[in-house]
Image (tube, rainbow, N blue to C red):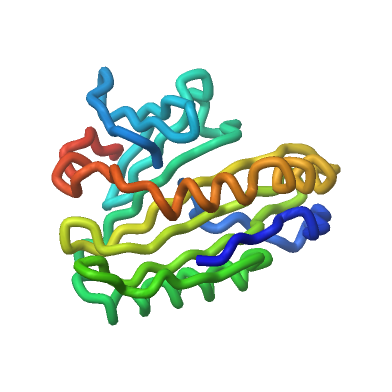
Length: 197
């Protein structure tokens, strides 16, 4: 996968944009009180919420799911079990991101020995109150379609310059770390997390 520069993006808050079910990798996953703990780019992420295969993690100090700034989400799609189905899932999510915001980058990691094809989407979503950078990786984990999402939010009506600054400083690093992360929690461990009602 080729290296990319994020510094060329100009971001402006667009009230017409809508955040669409975005959210959410780390180094080793470990047991945490009440769930699973992930470590990503030097930060511990704790399990906050799970329902219907969607599992959300935020940094220890970001406990309020209405005002988080960084989130890891792992979406497990039990019905996706082949490369062809994974490709369809990636294309469906791409369509959602295109409708809800601006797609900044898409990429494919070709299949290699024992490793199926993977897909990547980087998008910018938002509304009048926030902008959200979304880095999504699509892969087969334990034979099941899995989407790992790292999201970063900037709040406020004038969030464009702050998001530009964040993307310039962190975009390439996040993209590379997400696509090379090899310690995804087992699907069984994610399924065992407490579920929200």
